[in-house]
Image (cartoon, rainbow, N blue to C red):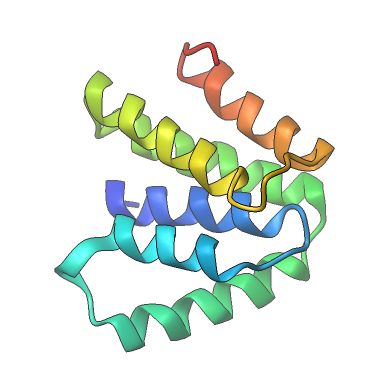
Length: 117
């Protein structure tokens, strides 16, 4: 899994874990993906991934999060990880609240990368 795919997967998991799917979250994810991809293709892929993630248990989402965060970590620099962590925080705060589930998942990300909030 490459760095962009790993980052995308992390953001999709974080956007899905609270069960709400906001336009603001989708915009942040599309901004992360940048201009490298066709927006229509990515939007369709996001819809498919969101449905797939809704169908799996939180434990499996945590497994997928760990896999993606390890892949991103191994291919990124410390400044890239710091910027990504800020984006992840912006994503989970986009609805002006952080749910217990979001808190669990974001803490795993910070802990794995040796960062503190």
